Length: 219
Image (cartoon, rainbow, N blue to C red; front, top):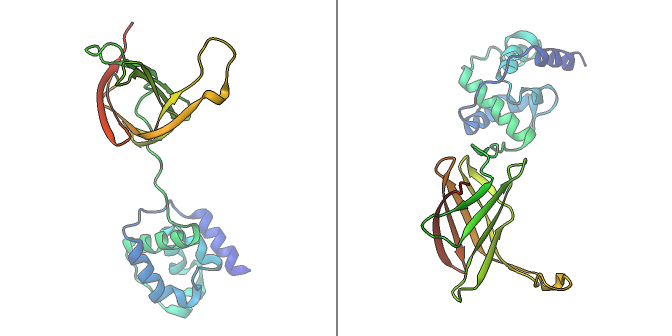
């Protein structure tokens, strides 16, 4: 119990973790030196070393006297301690997942190509940064054609990609018939924003790739 209190106190006083250089090297060091006392997965106070090389250094330097009694002096470099701390975090918490990219701007607007009148793309970017996109255009038969991009993910701060659906529905005249609504995924769509007012919309329809340049529509 006393040993646990010492580790808890050290955790509260420890400085922020350093960046790990190699989880694989941390595993090698942990297995060769630490595992005999701390087991695998780490148990007890060793778990507090996750992403906290400063705490591990403090423990080695005397905050946990039992460590010196068992293993003697340990001369780890800061990089090695960062590696061990990162490995413990991977075992305890699972592999880290990088945060999702955050879009650079709010791209909500009507978009079009002034040299290709007759089609356009409407972007609604929600507070969650999810985009709902609607393209109105024409098919091979020159009849109106609608596509939607109902969701997706940001691949980078200026690139958004998701499933691309062709949709059709009932006539606006007469009673609404929900059974007539058809949404078929025909490919994927990717929007690449080159700046606040220019972008490229690339999408596939049943294996055929289409690429359109577009700009914000001014009023």
